[in-house]
Structure formats: structure tokens, C-alpha cells
Image 1 (spheres, helix red, strand yellow):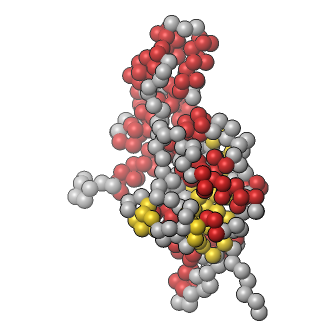
Image 2 (tube, helix red, strand yellow):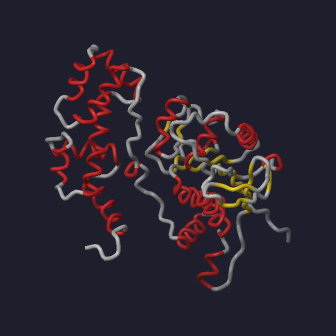
Image 3 (cartoon, rainbow, N blue to C red):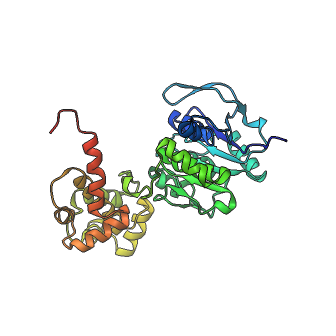
Length: 345
């Protein structure tokens, strides 16, 4: 009987790739079908996927942390694959990402034309963005790249709250959020090419539970304070110390010397936020830090950041974070307990 060809998944890597992402993907995907039977019955099964690490030229290199990587192939040696995973390729949130990987971008276009599913992890979405294939579609990456996508790839609908964005799945494009979102992507790929049974079994082997709450609870306001618009920059600096006060937007408008409409237009152009969204983001960011460490009640935290009405605080907080203040406190105080030094009370 002729042996059935295994689905091929290629992992595209570069010196800017995290070893944890590349080798985590490789280990888990390669184990599908093989490791679970070995752990349960003592008899290993067959590997169900053909996993290849590829790079632009196929030559050995060192990725982040000076970890050696030996690709099995150069991208020009592959014209067809069932799926491509663009691993994370770190870039600063202040750098313009375009033009760094022209060979990889051209190859991704060809692979998609030839029927491959294109996927990405974290900053790998920036390469997919350069292909133009994400234009007019929803996509995600790490929450820190929200502003970069809005400024440099405005045709993409960026979902900074998503861990795994499947909105363009029918167009053979799937994007994953932060670095550890490769967990969710591997389970998805195994389910797609091997079936849900193998996906569940692999998740059990590696204790992968997914990020059901999305990225929002982990996101932090990363908006740079500097702006070329003098009045707006001045208001940004001022509001950083005065966000708890009542009517903060009105006070900023008055301080700027602009009329309300002009101020709102220029503020959004400079920051990507409307004035009230900016104030709310500052308030919620401070509230998050207090909930993580302080002993104040949830209502007291809300009042300290400018919400005298507890219901309003809970509503705005959950809309921005994806969890209620109480659930957020429970989640991150549990982390602080795990991280507590040995011997601490």
C-alpha cells in the first residue's frame, strides 16, 4: 500500500526569531500523532506532519539569544506546502518595518498563490502585512504593534485583543498574537490537518490550554508621549498627571487654545486615540497596576483613577481589558503569588 503523504508545514525563521517560538512550534507539531500513544500505551505512533524549518538562503544562523538554527531548506527550494508559519521576527515598536525581508515577502506571495495557508506568530504578521494580502482583512499581532499597524498598514483591520484571528481563514490566512500565541496556533494547525482528536491529545501532552481571554488582559498602553504637534504634546504631558480629575477633556481643550472640533481632530491624528479614549486608557492602565498590587477595594481603585460611579468603572474596565476588575485582580495576584520569593510571607 502506498504511504500517504503527510501535510507539509514550513516554519519561516530569521536571526530576529525567538528560539522559544521556532523550536516550540517544531517540537509540538512534529509530535502530533507520535508522542501521545507513547505516553499512554508505551508504544509511539506515527508522525502525522512533515515539518520543515526554512530561511531566505537556507544557511545556518543564530537567532535571538545566540541560539543556533540549521534550516533544512532555503525558501527558493519550496514552491508548495500545505501551510507556512511566519515565526516572530522582532522589531522595535518605533522602527519602520518595511523593506527588511524582500525575498521572504515575495516567497510568501508565491506560496499563497500556490494554495498554501499563510499563518504568523506575533511580529511575523508584519511580513504578511507587507505582502498586501492582509489589506481589507482582520489580523492580529502582539498588542504592542497596534500603533505600528495603524500608521504603516492602515488598510488592515488590526485586532489587538485577539490571540488567534481566524477572520480571514477562508482566504487561507490566520494570524496569532503575542509570542506565546504559538500554543494556540499549533493546536489549530494540528486540528486542521490531523483532526481534533490529535489536537486534544497533543494539548494534553504539552499542557496547552490556550488563551481563552484573549490579549486584552495583558496589554499595556505603549503610546509614545512625544508629538510634533505642540499643543497636543503639551496636553499629553499634562493629562498624564491629571487624568483622575473631572471633565479632563474639556480642560485639555481649554489648555490647548483650540476649538473642540480642531482639538479632537489633531489629537487623534497625533495619538491614534480620541481625547476621551486616551483619558480612559490612562485611567485603566493605572487601575490595572493598582489591582495587581494594592489592597484598595475595586471601588476604591475606580474612584482613585477618576470613576466615582463603580458601575461606570466596571463597564469601562471590562470593555478595555476583557475582564472585570475583580477577575483581573484574581488573575494577576495569582501570578504575583507564584513569583513571590522563597521565604516571603
